[in-house]
Structures are given as structure tokens and as C-alpha cells.
Length: 87
Image (tube, rainbow, N blue to C red; front, top):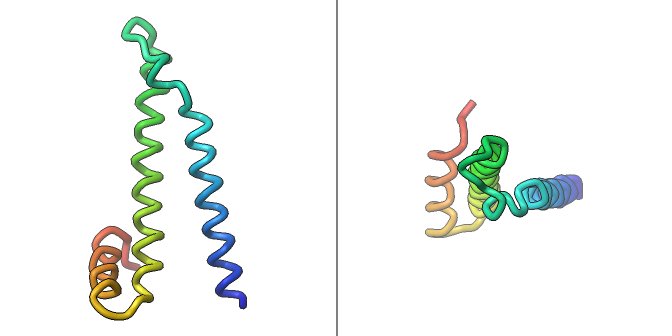
């Protein structure tokens, strides 16, 4: 029960981060102007935020897929081992 609740909270937090990144970067491509340093800064920071969010999403999905048996679980384990830090 507690593991399922923690997993659900993690998914909700991941969705909230995605919505926050979407909200903060909305319109940054259309507003980019080479004469305005602020708009270019927002575009660069937004791009980095989307890359970090994609990396986080990939890590969460592969970690969840590790629990599956067979080839999918083995492949997900290999990917998760490569992209997540081992402590």
C-alpha cells in the first residue's frame, strides 16, 4: 500500500513538474528576438529545462519498466543503470 502511494505521489509530482515547465516556457520560441537578450535567455533556460525534464521522465519510466519480467525488464535495467547515478 505504501509503495503504491509513493509511486502515485511520484507520478503526480512528475506531472506537476511537466506542467510547470510547460507554463514557464510557453511562448518562448515565438517571443525569441535576436535583439533582445532576455528573450534569448528565456529560450535557452527553457530548452535546458525541457532536456532535464525529458531525462527525468526517461529515468522514471525505465526504473518502472525494470519491474517487468523478460526482455523488456532486462533492457530497462540496462538503460536505467546507464542513465541514473549508482550510489
